Image: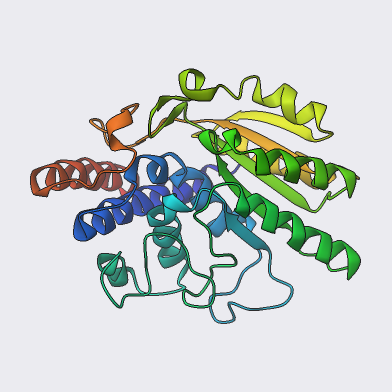
Length: 280
């Protein structure tokens, strides 16, 4: 991948992380850890991969993105703001009464949101329906779905996995954010989904494993997914929960807790300094 593009994506990912901290601090609630771990992915998708148009959010030919792990909405909102779907200033209204940006994505209320999610497992199921619709109507759009690794404990995920393989949904690319942590602890301790790659392969998926924070690996994986025929693709991303904020990284406690004023300043200082280095 071109170095200039990588730098642009790193800058955008840092701004998304800043948006996550801004939103959750303002809300005094939310899920920063899992939003930060997918910031690089969201930057890559919205800046480089997705066929979307902020001026026409319901464009019929647009690619669809479903945030199946809907609690990571602060990350999605920050990415949508970076892409121009609504002003960045609106991120400060997260979870406020009467605001559009509620704790989970709401289709029809927030431009750029293709599916209301929050109940784990339902997002990937809806993504399968979107992909099947595209196959039936011979549309060329792609459907992308982002799942949490703890979400794989939901039986509905595996029903969707079986469905996608049965209907040969090669226009569907799902991504597992494998940060290893969920609200109750390590996923391997709570209800291990490992080996994730072998399980999806057994269900008939094409599986690719990558480092979630390496844009070159990401580019290679998504390009490979474009070549796969008659199978859905699963990209398993090894990520760091809380990525980009030192005291949040690999910490279970930051799954669903907002930073207080002191923590907010510490996080934003780190991110501003990193952004300044990237923009220098």
